[in-house]
Length: 164
Image (cartoon, rainbow, N blue to C red):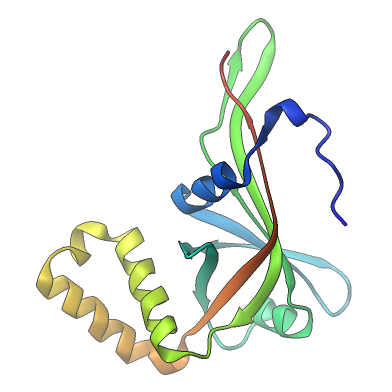
């Protein structure tokens, strides 16, 4: 189903690729539109229990695409820098997940994912008790108009080129 990596020596283990997915700040969600055109959009995400969660509106291009075709690709790029190391090269780390996206209908899981997103992107604000309450209040205020999607990985791959 998935092509074998050409430069196997640069491959990451599934565990290392998942760790990179967890640590990266943003990723690109790729879907396919009804007209067959690819659609890639950056999203903020969080990994919980090996699954990827992100929030969006209940309508829009990516939502339409995922509802029509749940198979998606999600990719992240970690540390990257161009260097001259016995020739021009780029040091990088990246990971890709191929899986199926589904809207989270369980309200408890949806709240957990939204709070995890708040904690990931604003940890200094969430750690304070009043800010944590404020985040929960904001989540509740926008809860009806916010969708949360879950990507269940079917294939994870990662690749890196690091200094020797």
